[in-house]
Structure formats: structure tokens, C-alpha cells
Image 1 (spheres, one colour):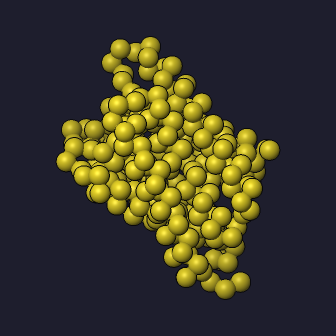
Image 2 (cartoon, helix red, strand yellow):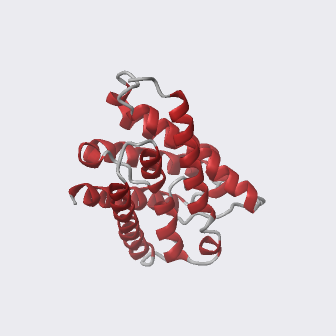
Length: 224
């Protein structure tokens, strides 16, 4: 249970800090580029912080897509995978609830940083973006944490956090960047509107991307 609780705490921090910065800075990929950079850094730094806080307890997935990738790679049981995902979803809802409580007290703040298709982006374009960039991100996670990949796992937290910054910098223009179903689910429930209508993109896309990453890693993983 400590592992699942750690995943809940870590995901809560990720959503509160990452989405919180997006809301506070007014992240707009067309009209506010500095806020885009700030939001990307916030999500990356939150992952780094949590990796060195709960990494020794649960491995710090804080993302159902990563958990699926680890399960498909044979690194965890189905029972643990379900427990991790449940913890992550609960943590995301707590983080979103805290953010909603804060933003509701400030007239100029709106929403909870929910993902949605950006201006001019089609449903297929958004789905492809989530598949592609989740695949890249989860592949980094699998490679950086592999015991068969030399000493790279000593710096896994830093590598994963920086890769998430990079993914956000590229993908925010298309979908606001999810690559994490729990991060998208809770804010969409609180925010509603088109974020809720398009929520399926940010659940299905990351899971497909994670499955692709697991397949790629199995093909290139060094022998033990």
C-alpha cells in the first residue's frame, strides 16, 4: 500500500505544480511563449523532485502510461499496475481539487490546466501527437531505468524530467501536452467543456504510445 500511496502523493504534486503553473502563467502556445517554457519546466521539475522523493518507494511512475509500459515490459505484475493506476488517478483528483479551490478564489484565473486540442489542430492531429510523444517519453523512462542499460539508472530522475520538458516544448502547441491519462482526466472533470469532450484523446493516445514504447524497448533492450 505504501507504493500506491506514494504514487498518489507524487501524482498530486505533479498535477498541482504542473497544471498550477500553466494556469498561473496563462499558458498560451501562440500568444505567450514564455509561459509555455515555464509550464514545460514546471512539469519536468515536478517529475525530478518526485523521482528523488518517492523513487525509492514506488519507482515514481506518477503516470498510468508509464505504468502500462512497465507492465508490458514485464517489470511489474498486473496487480501492482492496477494499484499504481488507481493511486495515480486519486492523486490527480486531489491535485486538481486543490488547484480548483485556489483558482476559484482569484477572478483572473480560469480552469484547472486541462488538456484540449489547440487552435487549428484536428482530432487526428491531436491523437497522433499524444501517441508519438508518449512513445518517446515512455521509451526514455524504460531505457533510463533499465538495469540492463549500464549505469544510466543512477541519473534516471534527471533524464526523465528533462525529457518531459522537451516533450512539453514540442507538444503544447498541439494538445497542451498530456502524455499522462491521470494528468488529463482529473482537470477535465473539474473544467468540463471541450476538455471533457476531447478527454478520450488524452487517455487512448498515451496508452497506445506507451504500448508502442514497450514494443520498441523489447526490440532494442540489451541482454542481461
